[in-house]
Length: 245
Ligand code: MG
Image (cartoon, rainbow, N blue to C red):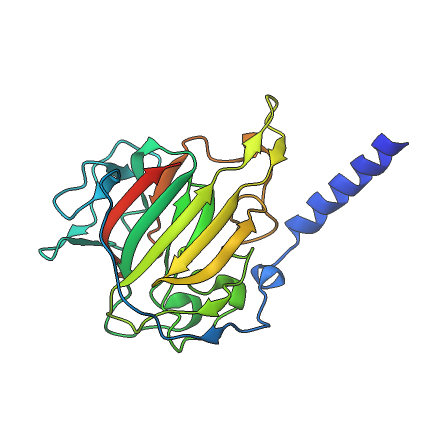
């Protein structure tokens, strides 16, 4: 009987998901307060440098061994080349501390999710949103420093477009048993421009644009690398390093 009820529940959730729209997982209230952030900092001695502006040697295009086609800039940064696809690190990672700096385009174009959109996917599964959220309203669980469609940031600590911003993120990876069933949820702690915006929040599963997070390991991307998203906008990145935890 129990099994039957579970099966019924599972199939009805699946069926309901197939008919879901993106808007059904958008949360607009509450809107995080605006906070003005402070200053930046540089890498510690035990950091693994993933990008220092000299080359893309630690990176490749998503799901391939192709060399990165994004733009390498003379100011030691990189910029998304729209349409070439997302890039991920060659190496996989477990629990890490990540530092990364990002900048949305000076020239404001589009609105909501269409303005300076990119993202950092941990293990290619869980996204911390990158977006121009400076005086640019969108759904709260989709603005910059949200855990996309899972957790609203505590405050909106974003800087203006065209200004470098910092992420310092502690990612603790989720745990699974030998069959790939989740046994312990992972967590995110996120500082945006030195301001705590996500305080040890539980990862609900994979980041999904439509529908609910996936929680079973076999339903998730296999190569657990760090990914930067090509969302069609000219977002730039620099000074990317991690520390293994
Ligand atoms: Mg994104």
